[in-house]
Structure formats: C-alpha cells, structure tokens
Image 1 (cartoon, rainbow, N blue to C red):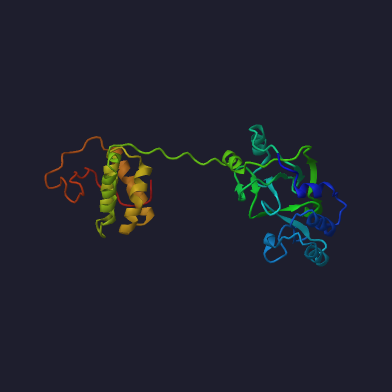
Image 2: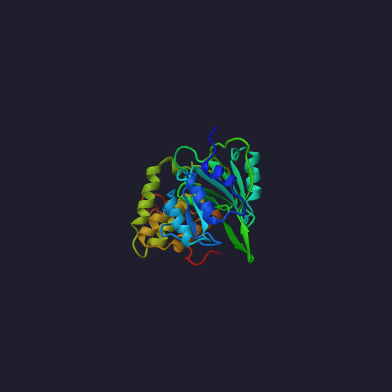
Length: 311
C-alpha cells in the first residue's frame, strides 16, 4: 500500500476560497511541482509548459505575482508522484466506460476525485514504479495522464458558458491509495484487434512460392503490369487465398512495378470476381500453358477487366 501523495495532502487543506497564488505556493511547499497556465484556461504560460514545473517556492511566487489569476498546472507521473484517469464528457461520455472498468476492478486504489468544470471527472492515483506514459482511449472517452502529461488542479477555474467554474474536489479515499495498472486499463478500454489468422491455403504451404510470385509482379514492365498483376491475383484466388490477403501480398510488388494503389485494388478485385464467376475453365493450349508465367502454370481462362472504379 502506498503512502498518500503530496498532492492529495495539499489539496485536502484547500477550499474554493483559496487565492490561486496561495494554492500554488502550498503545492510547492508540499513538494508538488507546478507551473502557470492561462487564466480560466489550460494553455501553459511558460515557454516549455509542464517541463518548467518546479517546487522552487521563489520561482512559483514570481510566476503568480506576475499572473495572479493563472490556473495551476501540475505534471503527472513520476514528476509529481500522481497519475490521473480523466473521464471526459465531450463527444463520447466516458462515464459508461469508467463504470465498466470499475466493475472489472481496474480502477480501485484512487486517492482523490475532482470534478472538472465541464462535468468530467479526474481520478488521482499514486504513481507506480517505472514509466507510465500518457495515453488516450478516445472511443471510450477516457484519457490517462501519466509521464509527459499534465493536469489542471484545484482551485483552478475554467470559463464555461460565461461562468467561472471550479475544479472541485468531491471525495478523498479514507485509506492511502495504490498504483493503477494503466496498461491493463488501456487494454480493457481500447483492446487491440486480434491478430489476423495465418492463411493456410495451398499456396501458403510454400512461402517461397508466394515470394517468387510477388517478385515476378514487381518486375513487370509498362504494357504488361496490369495483366501480370491480374494473372497473379487469379492464381491466389484459385488457391483459396482471401482477397484482402492477396492484396497485402501483391500491393507492394505492384507498386514497385509502377501501378497506383487504386489500380492495384481494382485489378485484384477484378481477378477475384472473375475467378468467382468462372465455373469452368477451357483447357489451355500448349502455347498458352506456362507462357509468361513464373512457375509454368497455365494462365486463367478469364480476361483482365479494365481498371475502372470498383462496381
């Protein structure tokens, strides 16, 4: 179990009546680095932003004597000893995702809850060991503020609808907090797509063969590029390779030969449509069998369609 952070100890002693210069000085005295941000806003005033944050009381007093209405910015992560889960309400309402994460037991251990002026929620945790980089889970409406990030802290204010609204602490946890597993939370909120299954069709039994096919397409010259790509795509289609996999195999090679991506897409799609709609293939003549193919394979008995837009 972690000791309560200096941030939480400092903010527990404050209330809405505290002048911002006094609050900034109190954070500095508690060992929490701060820096000035635009009055009623979030934009840093100093040139390097959160990288200028300091616990030097003299510097903090100089800043806030010059900008007494400046909001208080605090770097998150190792610099301040706290990380923040930021539940947003713009575009995507993050409360639903946060409730799901809470039911899954992924957001326990917080120290303080702060209501943001826009109606969102900042949940503060003690920073754990090692670097925890800031990230966003936009589809869930939740951001994580860790290393190389910052947050605006109470008793700062934002101008919302013409009113100056506080960052308002709403609750402090009775026990000390414990570090958040930010990586696990991110995987829960924004899971990575599963890896595409490896295609195991007949051609895949020889990766070298597929490689030679792509290499052959890459060497096609002007006047034979489309036909060569069409033939190669037909061979993959005939062997059961999914169309998207065929495009992935052939795209770089056809680009190297000088075809544009739109042409490549159209030609591959045309080949797959042709193979799908061809139920019988006339026997190839001896002259046609293997002519121009890299592996002595017969050309498909279908014609390359012009590379117009996809139907």
